[in-house]
Length: 547
Image (cartoon, rainbow, N blue to C red; front, side, top):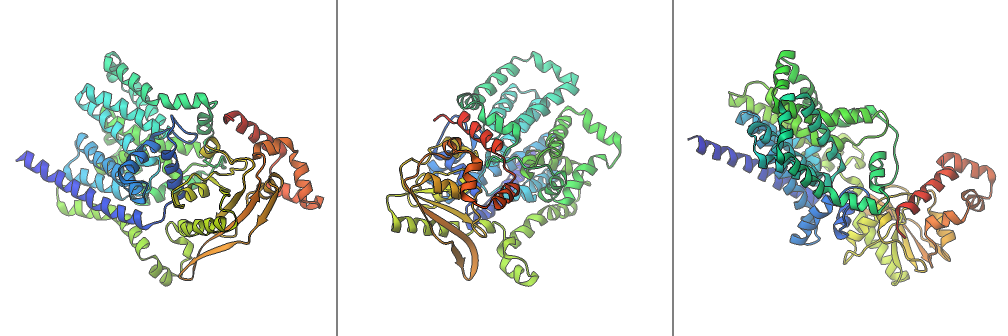
């Protein structure tokens, strides 16, 4: 009887995961490809030990699915949906491992699927698509070991720890959480006598060794990026703790984010201490707190993205579910299930009926989800048509890495398109650079006016024999503005920008372009860029890239 009931529960769990997974797949196929998706897809076409932005996990993840389903949008969306669905299933398993009732575990499952941050990210292929499920898997194996003392679970924990680190460096916080848990639970120190602990550590070291190899070959560029918390564009933005908190409230939903911090204490400290004294629940609490509190502290120094905290969400939803009212009555379980579903349901309705809602509420068209990603395919087609008409032998050269990745995706045959990356550093910095002596069609795509990067135009003027600038072009669909793009036909591209700035004083170049000294001073004041800043960027570039 118990076995039959267990099978019924698993059938319900799998039905929930499959049905919502199918819905997410359809939404993902409907929406245009995001810039980050194209960027990470480029990683899968250039397999390496590691990369400037992250380890090789996301590249291997995407490569697996493109090998099976081709370099198609379906392959990318399946890669995202399938792995996140596996993570959702493991959340249910974690809840059961901790002794929650079936109804409580189902609530944890629904929350892990339908919380705004999780739902939005589950049909977008990024490094989190493999990283978060591996974080959840590491947590599951750790709890199994704590509860059952299974050595194979201990090895599973260390393997998932290493694989997670291959996907995203944030996995180091899981290590901090595990060490903190071990430090405050002396009864668990007997694990130090377990030979499987050291075998697991060895396995983790072997799994993450490709990251060390790549960084050693590239002057530890990736570690420098992580320690500086830089974005792919190479910019470290100013701090904003308020924005960080608002981002967490939106990603987790205000109701459940408040519930996470309040419910464990609803029966007083005694109730909380009962959780804390249980080794498995203590591990779960630390796992839930480690990222929100760590990045709260970091947000006082630099900008923090909301998704960096997402790996703690599974532990958070399990804690919420454990502290919700008694679910002996199905009506209560149904009520909380509906509450959990509301954010995702509202989001789906907003996507599907945006234009009708926009007409009623007079919303700006830019509020459409992924609005900034519509029109790129049409822009790339227009740019390619221009190249074919003016010089079929010319190469395409993107102003930014986002444009380069999207162009590679949308062009027939999916050729590699390099990026200028002027005064910025990302993975394109380490890939094939534009060829000196070749003609290029340089392009820039924008949602608004095609504002050029600060140094693009005068670099092209000096680096090329001739630059022909074409007027901006617009992409419209059904009368709706989507994109603007601009192209420059550049003959005989000369030296790369890093050599260009080394060979010329920054101030002298600007003075030649801006003849009026007053205008020159305004330009410098506006962009707040000094010669020393530029020289440091150039030095970093030359140090990190093997020419």
